[in-house]
Length: 262
Image 1 (tube, rainbow, N blue to C red):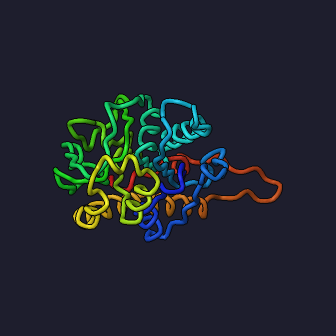
Image 2 (cartoon, rainbow, N blue to C red):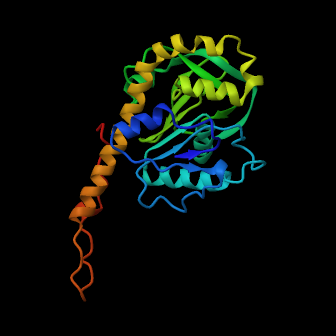
Image 3 (cartoon, one colour):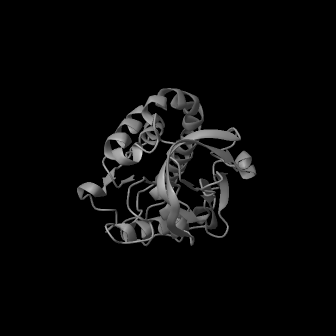
């Protein structure tokens, strides 16, 4: 889990992963934690938000390395979840672009799920209208082949999927009351542009929570299933006897398991 800012932690995402029995390795780049050099032993990649720009290295020294990790995850079909800045980085890694928007979008606001959401492994069953927490000024153009899952009139790219196991969320679906408090404290000037944001949080989150927890629960279940398959393959991989070379893998050994929702 790549965390760009102390206040922009995993919140509900982390809770869902922990509930699925998964161990999350936080990479707090704001505190100097090094990014992993590769995805060996990694069953999923979660990239959180932050005030940096996905289209510029200025003030964002880990941008290039994060894009490389995302590209590697896409190539290997490692499950990915990108939130806000993480979603913009995912779009860039997949061949899209990120750019400045028409102004900050901060506060509680509605998004509409797209037709494809009804068939999406995470978003199926999510209502057509969903009120979520927005907190961004940049936006993105989705890459070719990306599946739009949610949009709003001002910023159409609100949720999308790339391939079979990578999701980007422009809005902060991970938010709980602790997240709202942290965001307001970290960005008071931006919070001031959305009067009543904090006061409305309990009611807004109560309505959002069932859908939030279902989406992240499904992502966690997908990752847990992948981790179990990886462990099973490792356990049954034949090891060479001392002094003898390993036998070449069979077609069954090299065939990638189908996604959990097939």
